[in-house]
Length: 611
Image (cartoon, rainbow, N blue to C red):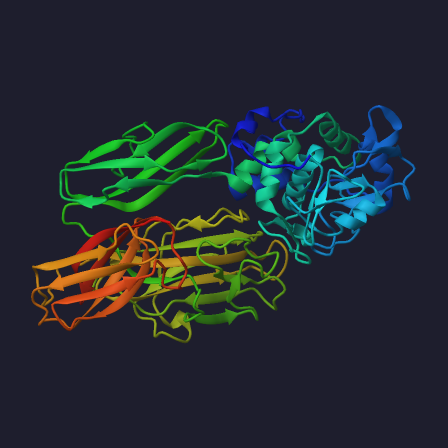
């Protein structure tokens, strides 16, 4: 029967779990996302590897027919056949060995956790296809369907296949010269070390929980052959925690207004399991203000407030989201974006190498196994790894000059990522007001900046938090990321990446601008809108300015779009097509827009995009 996934959440409770040895997964408790994946890798790596010929013998044991010990069960057909081997059956690499070209190499090519006996003809039909639903029914394996780029196994082993793919992506992470395998939400991934389709495999994991045969197979591999387990058979929810996880989000209405301001908060968290607890810090003081799912809160004093929501799901997993400077009460302004770069438009930073033949490079999420497999913003990031160079590294990535003279309380935010180990941290963040803009950075004066960085070898993009730049207020500043390494090989080099770099601040009330101060109307029509809206403005006295800027922000205060406006009369308009500065469509949501000139806000308002 063809599989059509309907209500995946209702099937969570139906999951079965095997019984691993006590303490086997202690290092994975309370983790999620890439941190959990890394912890599981530490638990299951360095297994006892066997040869490809030895795997033939082992499969007679791991896939033994419980009703006939002289037979094995074939993966895609479910047939019970003699265990004699070829030509009755052969060894199927469920993670197609051409996806990364590891062949029958001892390790990924001989790992019993993804080797299964299959009918040779069916094995050939599956080939190196990715996994997905749909296609033509196979004439022999009648429970299976296929098309040009994907293979759908029979319902009884859909979860088995998913958990084998997730095992391979966790076990082989590029350490110690091994291949780095990753699951992606795509087909046609050959010959990259990738396998898909992630969204379908997630469904299969839920639809078909581990049965006695799969659990016994896991036990036999652990006890008699490799000494490691497939963690996703022991706990299928690990799949959700790594590849779906908990995405905490919330909205507020309104986000700006005069005091007293009553605000309604709405939880918009996505979680693989049911959420059982909410904890809100609604004024940024670190103290819980509400445990309701959708609380209201009265702001009686003017100010700019950061909001944090922490949730707990039914599996005991915690996650949180903080929106900095999210609620604006009274005359406070939203933070302005002074400088932003995610390297989507190329590179205008200065790269300077003091030592080593390797330099910072602009990279994307598919460039190599040692690179990040995801990107915080867009497709590109900056990457540095001194492995294989001629000497220890001292390499600088230096921003263009950033003007902080028009803003108060400026701060820097960025995302960073690291992999592998070294005896030194290998990454420092600096700021300078006297760097010449090019050339040797050691000739300038640099101040160390205190930023949050990812844990060693965590391979997790980590937010820096708000890095204080107040010392450089009313000045121009260069930001620099310095990479260093103690050597050129294993355990003496780390890989580092940075992305999503923003410098923000607040309009400086002490700066006097010769601007009009009243009778400015700013609105948009239609509102709500899809796909476009027209921003309209009316100005009673435009004689003191002849140009302005219309700027659009999301509700996190992040710059979305900015457009120059020529003021040639009392009325004007600008059309927005619902795209960002890179021409990419933005998502449904509330957006703040404002008209400004000479660094001063003239008027602001909100609009709603509905898709």
